[in-house]
Amino acid sequence: MITACGSQRVRYKDISGSYYSQGKNHGFRYQYLLTLNKDSTFSFSIKSQDANPNCNGEWEITNNKFIILKCEEASFLKTISNGYMDGEYEIIIVNQNKLKYQDIKLRRTNKPSVKLDM
Image (cartoon, rainbow, N blue to C red; front, top):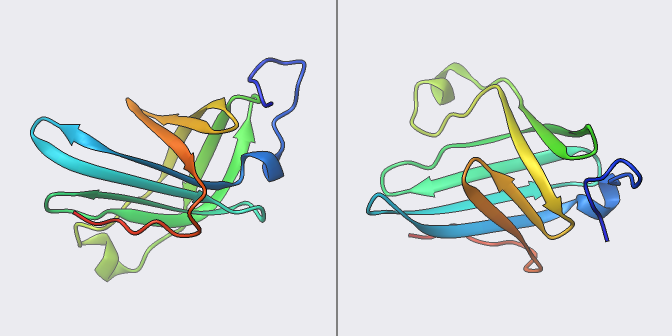
């Protein structure tokens, strides 16, 4: 089991995988999908009523309790679309099967690829 205490180290191979959440907030449905690859790359997608922002990049574990997502630079056309995410995002490691992004709890999914549908 992975914990965030200082006595145990979170390993990339243990935390890598796909994490998913769906729900409703302020009357709008949403879906989140985060895939952390063992090679330290990731893909992160958020789907809501009128938008589907996403990014790819590299991730790292910091302080044995956070995952930092660093989005790669996007083309100009992508930056002016509603599907653009940039910068860094902080994910809290709750345990090996659960992560937290802002107020959203992402749970590990065993499905090889989850499709974001509305």
